[in-house]
Image (cartoon, rainbow over all chains, first blue to last red; front, side):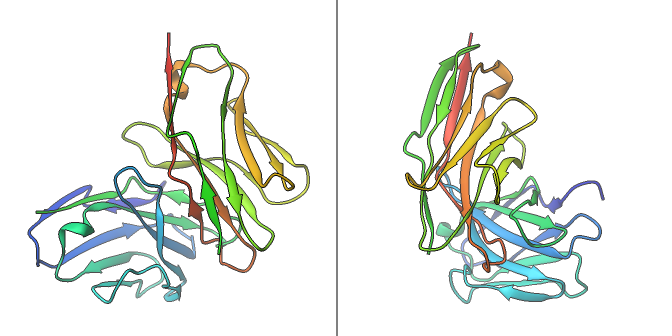
Length: 114
Length: 114
């Protein structure tokens, strides 16, 4: 597609529930990133994919967070047993090379855990 | 590890006035530097970047930033702002060999008024 698409744009869930956030990157972009932006903060790195594999998952806060990219295109960020502290905007970005930091970001998914 | 400091959380300015948004970074290795902009209800967009070469970089809409290694700064400037420049501006840093994992500052809200 023309840009990075993230769905849903908003998600409200109850504490303890499981959620999936989807990212559809720009066609042909091999590098895909997930970031999390809490209120009043800058985005924080979660995980980086190069193709199908997670090249760097050092930003995932704990084992409740997991992400996949099985065919090297669409990626899903999965959060188990959600907590109120998980509330944030989850941003996805893609890049053709994974170098130089020139990403195209999606508009994000606003997750609210109540 | 790298870090970014944006000391000004908000910068109010009148239209057609000059503006400077400050960014300082900390890193033990050579860095790449970026400014991203987030307009209301939109995703992050790359404004400009410094990878190597000339320390003064410019964007297409009149912003410029200068990489100052001795002061570890990458301040963003515009000689005359417009109402449409109202947005959140994020400074970010990455290092070679970190697969372009960006570390963002907390952002500066530029509010342009008549």
